[in-house]
Length: 192
Image (cartoon, rainbow, N blue to C red):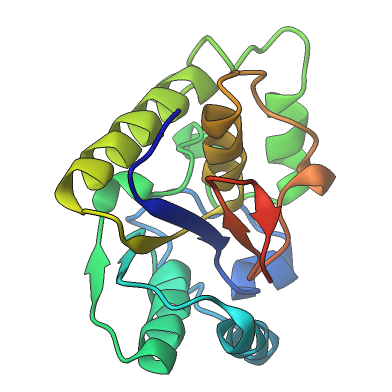
């Protein structure tokens, strides 16, 4: 994908649900899971080496908003909430469940969340399309700017695949970007 702006994507800092190992994929139930003190420190360190941004967009989840606020304060910017940067939507019965349960559903051969929804879940394909469309729309709204998108592990994974012009679906959980990592999407270089 060719973009006229420089896009950077950042996974939120360590959050309470990360420490507890609990899936938090629904806007309705994610409020208790803000950043931990370690997560705040991760984001503060990332802000020290981050390039200068012209705009910051964040998922509407508490952990991403708190991450974006730290970055925005460090750069004296306002942040914008972009609903379409939200976390991958798993089936409601997996929300608030241990990571191992969600991982077993996603990576079970009889389930194909890459292409086939379970109940009201999203598929990787749907998330990929949602994020590709969002990226193009944001690219049209700016002109030669550096833009930070603060989101979650699976969306970061999808953004990387979008920039590589491929869709290979979910990778292993342990291969997701680390908390507070910033990746320059145009070059796929790790910044922080």
